[in-house]
Length: 242
Ligand code: SF4
Ligand code: SF4
Image 1: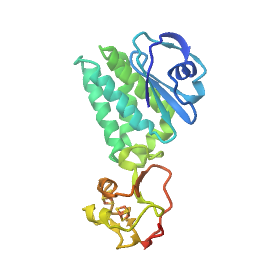
Image 2: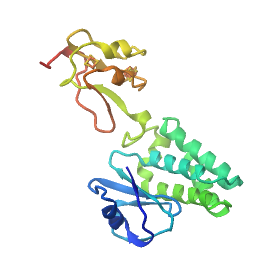
Image 3: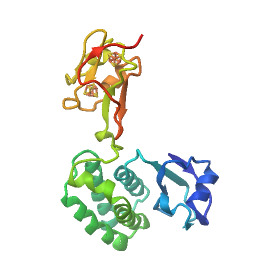
Image 4: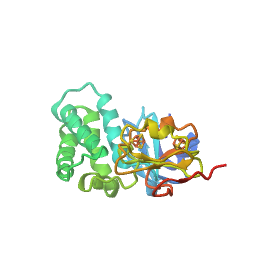
């Protein structure tokens, strides 16, 4: 979640969160926007840090958020913030953004981690624009702080938090399904099993995560889940809802 901040100078993330009225429970990290341009993990929320003049946004991340996706978005924002066309800032930023976007969409390659680790320090030192330098710096920082979340996107095509949309799965809640069949009709991939008055079931192997069933269900029985999946039957069962 994004919060507006208008405080510069020496402070702490805890003080900024408190001043913004942000909930702190369950947070694992925050991002302070450019020109401060830094991630801060929860363990350092009480440490003093210098917030640069002009830093306007504090973004919070909880356990369900993916830090690979977080880095992808931050790199995209920093790229948009500069009109510089220098090789390392502009081209390097494009390359990093593309690599991270692929990783968040199940297309990461193990060799891309080494590519980021090669490219990022060069960007941090050689980019002409400050935004380009910041991209290199935060990419390295994120890998160091959140490598256990980011690297599986490349090495195993996995998202440990399931925070990336491409890794989320769709499920039908037994407690809400009326067996109306509207989701089944909406699914073009033949990924839903069910018949009238039976709780419908999504076949995860066939589901392409298009979201059409979620839109079609009038009961709010279809949900999208991250790492925590609802318990669902393996095949359709009679509707329990009265
Ligand atoms: S998300 Fe799309 S493919 Fe998956 S079950 Fe729903 S409608 Fe079918
Ligand atoms: S999941 Fe929703 S749309 Fe599908 S059968 Fe159940 S109530 Fe109907």
